[in-house]
Image 1 (cartoon, helix red, strand yellow):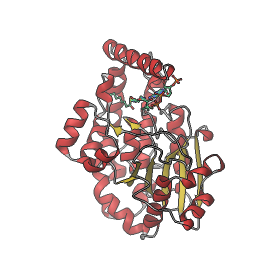
Image 2: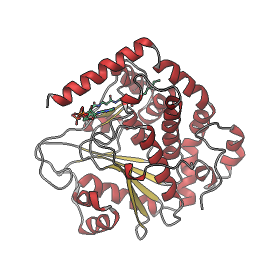
Image 3: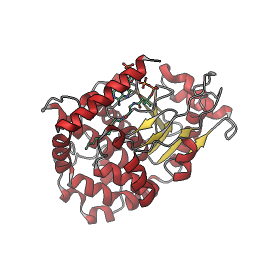
Image 4: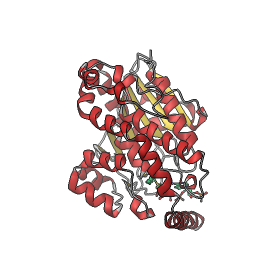
Length: 341
Ligand SMILES: CCCC/C=C/CC(=O)SCCNC(=O)CCNC(=O)[C@H](O)C(C)(C)COP(=O)(O)OP(=O)(O)OC[C@H]1O[C@@H](n2cnc3c(N)ncnc32)[C@H](O)[C@@H]1OP(=O)(O)O
């Protein structure tokens, strides 16, 4: 079912595959052609399909924080590709097995004293995750129950719809009562002494608009749920007051969710994500994909064209002494904070 690869986007990309004529055809082939053939460690993501509903789940599963390592990036791409080959599936819920962290962004340990063979591969794998999500023929719904800083926010922005948990005292995240948890989302790179790469920064610009993005990028702002909603960074914020679950949705979710996260059928965010996924799955795929091409093809084409230069820039930037110093300090502070809990 999946069309031939675009001469492997993970290495090199040629614009001839993305000619304007091709986009004009408004078919599914552009999105299919963005698939990859990376093989990976599957347990880093849990995925499953509910063919009756036309919906799949792809849950990131890399404790403790779903930080994006080379292997997790590859696993996301592989899993998405598998889902893509199932013609009965039109929507995917991108979620996390961790109820308080969606994804902590890049695994910062990948950036410290990096191996010079692995670093470009690592960056390529992140670019590929973006290309595969943003350019997917599937409608992808982000179920953001927990924190989504930096590349975690990028994952959410690359989806078609974003639903965030609103937090609050005594609220339920996975159906059980727990203490207050208020997730945040945003591109906080400047807080680490680094800058978001151009394609990630531009994705924020396209999502929330030029001036708000300019300020948020400079300050490295992490938005709590309601602020994220007001800015347009997420499409919906779910609290117990704002959403009433239906028995049918819970039943369909129980059919969809793999064993280790079946209890998330009781999560309001997951329930809303499922309803949204069903909504997208009911639209004619040709029409839905054609409309996605209208808004996404140009920026994807640009990103793909500058991919190699982006990797070169990233590798040389990360290896600078001051950047290494900043990153080491940041990781020490992160570890100290975690130990002091
Ligand atoms: C041209 C250059 C472009 C570079 C682009 C960069 C994009 C990026 O994505 S950079 C990464 C940015 N990510 C962050 O700044 C997030 C850091 N993490 C946090 O702020 C918090 O962990 C959290 C808000 C996500 C969650 O807080 P919570 O209190 O629930 O958990 P913690 O106790 O802080 O963490 C648990 C555990 O996870 C480890 N960890 C957290 N984040 C990362 C990470 N990004 N990489 C690696 N490891 C991470 C943390 O150290 C804890 O581990 P230990 O218990 O073993 O210490």
